[in-house]
Image (cartoon, rainbow, N blue to C red):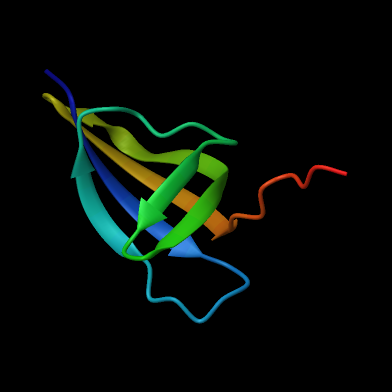
Length: 70
């Protein structure tokens, strides 16, 4: 089973980001909850080639703004 070591960097807000181990690869456009806040994934980059079952991923996010109904 693959383990994704994901570094989350937040733009547009004073948030420290985080590093998490995950079993699922993050995808652009998905929402992710970090602490009490919800963020939208803008960019997903593989930092280095996988080493065994470990994948090293960099994710850039911004505060999530869900679509509004009119």
